Amino acid sequence: MKLDLSREYDINRGKTYLKKLIKSGARIELKKYQERRTIQQNSYFHLSCKILSDYSGYTVPEMKIIIKDQLEFMVYEKKGHRFYKSTSDLTKEEFSELIEFVRGFGETHGCYIPSPEEYITSQFEIERELQI
Image (cartoon, rainbow, N blue to C red; front, side, top):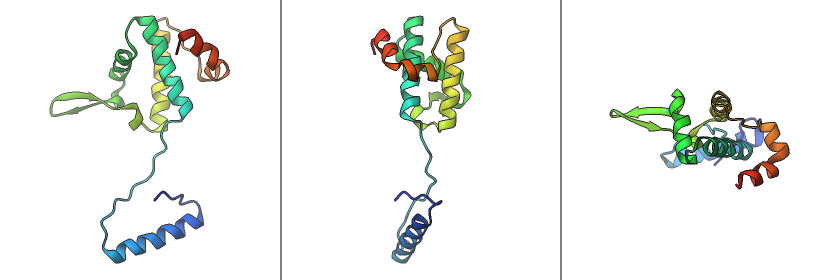
């Protein structure tokens, strides 16, 4: 059950349901809902990776690994092995940071990546040019 605790109606629904669960002795998991990236952010990220991969000669999956390897919050270790977080696990803020890094990474390597605003206004032309 997803509730918006800024709305009185949802607060009351949540309290009623919680009382019912307590009464039944149910086992539950209660966690805060995290907003994930937007569809626009996702499209822009994939476009940016495509531009970088075309420019560098790497495939898009290879380019994503190269990018993730540069960002501390994208890498974690477990039992002595390095792993990369999935971008779908990032918060909106982390995903925004990733996008900013990708643009800067491209600039550092002489590859122009349009801004999100440029992408929004010219999305169809850019995607047609890149054959996406």
